[in-house]
Length: 168
Image (cartoon, rainbow, N blue to C red):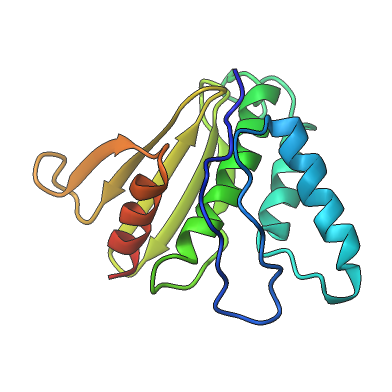
């Protein structure tokens, strides 16, 4: 099962970013082909907002078992591909909020999932991506009971909500 791009109109507040048409019901491979084709049609004006994140995702393919010295598995290829699709959707969803996009820190966790992290003042947002799931942890202080929360980050509404929370 691949993540499917949802029917979400994509808008951009900056003129130098390609505006994508919504991609309804396409598989990850089909969506990547369509996005690549749109990049190539507009190569002279191309600015890919998630470019640096995607480069960092590509680097995860080269990580080996025990990459951090603590016996952890290498990042799962399916998780990397899911993360690539998810971060594109996350960017698109940030365009629907009043907050600008910032690139995340990209790494992997002890289970081979991809991890994206963003910080804004005393807030931290961590998103974990496996082959089939996306979930988050929001942190705004050290108390795990009253200053942290978690949930899923799979729908457009959920992505917009966590981005707005981080940037308020």
